[in-house]
Image 1 (cartoon, rainbow, N blue to C red):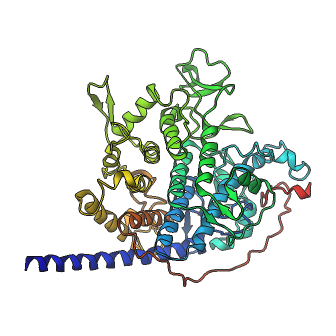
Image 2 (cartoon, rainbow, N blue to C red; image 1 turned 30 degrees about the horizontal axis):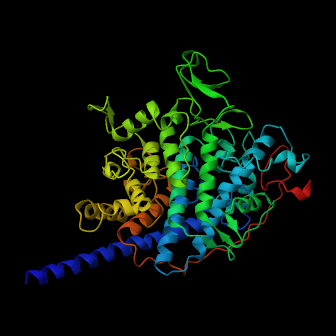
Length: 552
């Protein structure tokens, strides 16, 4: 009798679980369709500025009309989009579903990284008046292959892109602003960051490495014979073929990821004869590059520069020695990803490794005899991200302490995606402690399912008067921003793309219930043609397309 009751309860629990997951999956289909139709320009013209980069947030008026669109600061765009597509690819393929559209979107997303790496210097040369796209030769505008070097501006959503595609986002073109880089109806870092055309900071690089790690782990080598792509210049295809990424009709995603990571780290670490940065009292304790760093309190070769201005990028550049602190994590993550040793300038021993591990584990050890505990309230988002990619455990390579640390569910700085990502990246290692029937796994399944079930069917927003509003899904990304708590603003309503929900849902499915995943293939696809408008206005650089060698 007891056995029959147990079996009956088991069936009831499975039925409830299936019903909950079906309801959450319905929302995933809705979010996915909305993202593709309202937040993203998908284009086979992969070198056109701005295409294939999702917007992140928009403001709507009292009638629900979009009045402002933002691409945010580049942290969630690439990490979340790569994470969504790589996990969706794996779920669809493992369930015998058609994944052609997902593969196409993933290839386009990776091509965005290539586009930014190749053409960032071109945009800056023109911006600073060093070259003119109207008169300069292609070899002066673009230095190939030198410009493919790991330096990326955060996006290239330009005024030209907005002029052609603003209707796609349901917004007006707007009034061109004073610096003539954009309008009052959208914001991109290309148009208006701390400085225009702002370079990637260390947190951008940490997050993009995590997204790339999922691509390498989850995506197989694939034929792209059916992925339409058009190139203006031969540089990107030539580079990828030369590196063994693009062979015949096939893409080797693991080789591709390794090459991008190599570029990112090489641009973050500066070997001799490059300058070191040095922190001195007279510079308000900010580190600057010096040929001879005499009399410095600290020096390092870990920092990020703009190769056109030959100065530090505007933010997250290492002037606070933050990249030096994270150098152990950056090098360890890159080493684990590629199999190549990236430790340099003491990153695998000494003070930088000590500080990294102390902040990660909230424990400053003294001579191995104990330690001084640090408060959990320290925000360690970059350190946790790097630790996830690099599987950075105290206690040796076989230790599983990191998993329990990441799964701690802190009240303020949770970052609940990290334990699931760690599990997927190192499944063989952690599956013996994290499986159905263990308390941690079973409790986590309920935690994630309940969290995902709170996401609204409509756009996540700041409007608390909406019937489905949830404080847990009302920021541009609960995976990144402080306290994971939403903003309440009913007058100036902000709406979000919901990519954080999509990313976390796919992680949940891969870890807890990978079977039965399928997409609604009947969604209405918008096929609107957006005609290229006139872009000859005086003194405005539209940056609609990169220069073409055939035009010079």
